[in-house]
Structures are given as C-alpha cells and as structure tokens.
Image 1 (tube, rainbow, N blue to C red):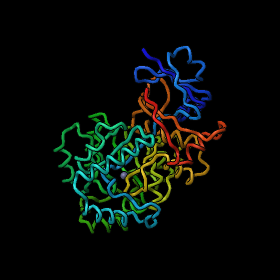
Image 2: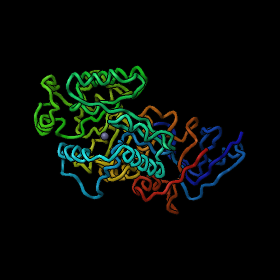
Image 3: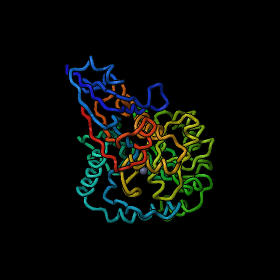
Image 4: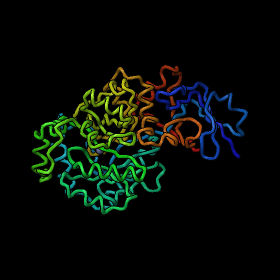
Length: 402
Ligand SMILES: [Zn+2]
C-alpha cells in the first residue's frame, strides 16, 4: 500500500471546540487508500510513509464547506458593490421574481450553475448543499469534483401545497423555503420525509425583520407582498410568535434541522436552538448585500452552537466564496476569534450537514482531499488564522489529492 506523507510548515485541522489542536507546526498528513490515516508533527509520521510530498510555504487545511446556496440562480449574478436597499427583503424578492420571468432556457441555467460550481471547486470548496425550485437543477452538481447534495425547495401557505410533496418519490430530498412562505402542514410533511430517508431539513429562518413581523403580527410588508402575489390564504392564521419558537411548536427542530441565516433571533430562540441541538448556517455576505442585519454569532457561540457558513445565491451575493464569507464575518464581528471563523468554514459546515465523518477536518478517517494554501513568508502561529480569514479570494489554494 502506498502511504504518502504530505509535509508543510503548518497544518490547520479545522477543529471546532474539540481537543484536537487547531494548528500543528511542521505538520504532516499521512494518507493511504483515499483516507487520512494520521496527522501530527511530520517527523513523528516519517517512518510510516514510503513517499513524502513537500508543500513548502503552505498551510495544509480541510476543503471548505458551503452549507447553503442555490446554483440554479447563478445566471442572475448580482452586481458587485451595489448593495440592496437596507432591510427591504420584500423589495429584493419582487426584483428576483421580475428577473425570473426573463429566465433563459434550461441549458443556459444549468451551464451557469456548473460554471459557478467550477469556480467554487477551484477556490477550495469540497462540499455544497444546493437548493433549487426546479428538479432539473439537480443535474448541476452531478459528477463534479465538489460534492453537491441537492434539496428540492417547496413553498406555499395553502394546505393544498402539500399535494405536490405527496406526489414525489420518497427518496427525493426536499426542503421548505421559510416559515413565512411554507405552510405548517408542508413543513411538517417535509420533516417527516427527511426523518424517513435519513436526511437534513434545511430552512431559511429569521432572515429579515419583515419575516418576524409577519409571523408575530400577521401584518407589515411581508403580508402585503403575500397578498399582492395571491400567496396568502385565510387558512394560514400565523403563529403569533417568533420563527424558532414556531418551528419548535411544529416539532421540526432537532439535530438534523439546519436553520439558515438566523439574523433576527432573540436570546430565547438561540437557547432553544442549542437545546434542540439544531444546526445553524450563517450567510454574512448575502445578509450584508440585502441589508437585513448581522446574525448574533457571539451569542450563538456562547450557547455552544457551532455554525457553518453559506454563500446563498448569486442573486443575493456578489460571489460564492467561503473565503469571502470568512472575511465578511470578521469585518462584521472584529472580536471573533479568527480560528473559530476558520472552523466555521470547515468542520462547522460539515457538522451542520451531518458529514463531519468525511469532510471539514484533517483527522484520521476523513477523505484524503484537502488544501495547500500558500502563505506570506514569515508568518507566526498567531498570524495564520488571521491571514486565512481576511484575505478572501486573493488566497490561491491548491488541491492535494490522496
Ligand atoms: Zn437561500
């Protein structure tokens, strides 16, 4: 058996609140049979290897995990540097729907999605959770170097919206859009399906203040928007409470539930997420672009939540780079530990998706596909994570394959 030792001045494990060291100096990763066999100071692994590959000037690191995107929207790339109106979620949705009326043909949509995915792969993304409204979009991520798990998104407040779900084969993994757009029976039906097929329930939660006002009071811009679209139904009386409490009342919050965005949360909701061991995906770039606010990440960490990161789509974010999400998060929360930000982008993401046995960590058993990220010369151990989390897309990682 060929046992290859990858050697570098630094090795970042991706550890998030575990005993595993965050950073190993003069590190090595021993790989064989497509899996990482051992990680540690390279000298301690030298005897076990029959080949050594040097990665001079680099830090070895896990591939990045993108917990939330919509590749089928890649064709409507946002204009860089032009922020949306502050906290006008319904205004943005209106614009999105207008643009969708002029959607190109399906081959163009799929090609744009594949091009976006290729750029994510090149930038070091190993795993993506992709959400689409069109079943055809599942083809975008098939047979690509970056693993893509696809969820078919469903919405509709009317009770009849559940009929479409019943018509789909059980193995089709589905996801409800959001508490304000998807009726309670459909949310519960999708959760039931994900419990049966061992999958994840992913849902946009508390992205905007407008959403919370609608759920709490049944009025405001979101209500007006739903009425205007003919999407509101008298059968949806509204929960009269916040988004997380509502989902908990529906009994859909557990460790296989991924709450995406989580910008407008009260402390009691963060407590509830932690008690239910629910997962969280933060999308700082999209939140900034739409002007909806910043998620309370410090409070989440204090309560033991370990968020992953997502880009959301090119309709609400100028790029699909997890390096840029790290940079945005650091700008939003300068007090955040850069090592924790890096952990969110790696094992935080793989834990959120329930795939940390394969991705997100440089530890034995994980897939032997990881990154060698060139560093500026002379960085000390204290400077590695600040470097990795503030350089954004100017970092140029190379893939290391088994
Ligand atoms: Zn989204």
